[in-house]
Length: 593
Image (spheres, rainbow, N blue to C red):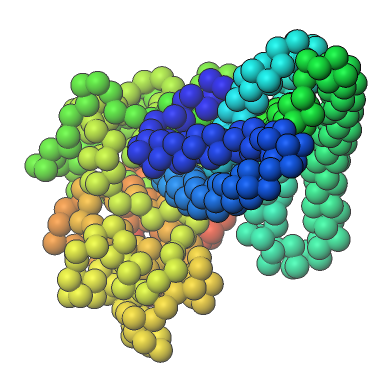
């Protein structure tokens, strides 16, 4: 219940509607409890006394109560649904906004499929719990308590006879609810796994087809789906024993009432109407217990989902503003300094990905990061915008530790073109404007021209208004990369990070992009990660990363003289076509020698 208490603020926002739903429910319970007493009146004062007027009057009252109860029930359902759906909407908003604060490390630990389940099925389960509690869950205990009181009022001795049976029934129900909550939590965990497999398969369906792995993926999904089914069946089998157990308790109770009540009636201590009323109150007491048992799966599932929702909401992001964090100065130059930086992906438990990184990026300069696959290039640049925090050492921006700069302010001054280009459904214009929604069309066109994207955009069916499919499915890899570069340039960043962002374009286009970047009216420090050596030749500084350490740094000419690793990379890609006494190639013509 503590897990539900943590989510109470989401319900408290709608306390007026919730209170109205509960008030209607309470009045409905009073009407329900009046029916057995009216039946007693019909039997004792009407039928036995042969008083037709009492029978007709009481019957009309019962019809009126039924009509009013129907209207009250409709009102209760209406407000219960409003509260439940509103709470679900707010929870989805809260979870989504919380996920936006996650660092890359947080997202590494909680997979996409798991978070999707939290936002969908877990929220739906908690919504059902709220609605059921306002509609039936609260009605059941009120009916039970009211019936008990009226049973005592009708026949205290008979009520005491029934007390042990009611206690046994309550213990059975509590036992089932307590046992079911962890079972439902396990089902939700298996559902997480199923969603992860499904998400991976849908995202990589082209690869699955290309490698003819549909059968393998089908078997993997089938195995995971079977686990979900087995757990669900296990829960249902456990639940299936509840109804027979409670039905047995109810039947025993009816037998006891008829037997004990009949003996008292024979001795004149209890009327037939009172026995019928007592039996109805017994059923009104036991039926809510049965109802609560049938709904226990909703409660158990809701409690399990509440715990999983709280796991997301309670997560403290690894990367967050320090108490003394300052805004990023608009006059900042963009000088970046790495001081003895080391980084481990899981705190200090794993092998270090980066060690003893000492590097200076001067304002307005271009620094290229070169190295083999897995050497730590992308990890290094991910530390600058604080996607991850350093494990040891410090990174400063204009002399200020980036951990002392407000995260949002830091992000606002850094533009990133990631290794995997991500475009959103919408127009080309919308995607380029993504980081600067207020940019004019002239600015959009200028950014597109600088990224060498303008010509192909204008060749599209509707130019800038051409619709981009999900993840840019209707564009080539090079086209997507150029739109991503234009998107980054439009934000006029102090720091521009290009993570192998021209790998899908030809050398000529890449050179034109580099020329355009150098001609930008705003000055920015540029970090370029590349596998292709032609991308880095004209950088102000080239940093060679090898096994998580800086193996060498300097200009192209300096590294050709001093770095065996750089020479090896250069020779493997360009051979002997370029010599140190020649100028660094500025375009395709220079590369053709």
